[in-house]
Image (cartoon, rainbow, N blue to C red):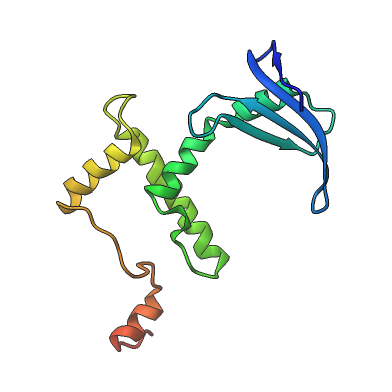
Length: 152
């Protein structure tokens, strides 16, 4: 791959068409981002007419959503629902999204991170960091069976 500076993005890039037995023909773009541990970012698309500038623009347009997903996964346990029921998973995801909105509304300053807000909220509500060890979303019928009480 031959490096060149893409004028539209002002970065050193390289692009090539590549064939992969698993996914077929793709367009590979390498962007030099000059980070010590990761000097290059690789972008792959099935649009073989995509220029490196277009690939970078697509990457940049998607970036604002990535911190939200990171916060939801790390702080709010987005993947925490282990139920095989689709309804339970949908409810869990909806509640995680609501919790994320609450964290954003509780921020005192734009520089305050969602993790700082969460830690402050947890300390206020429970007085210490806590983590549930078992599934907390048990249906009423399951809870009554566990307690030995019959539901009408």
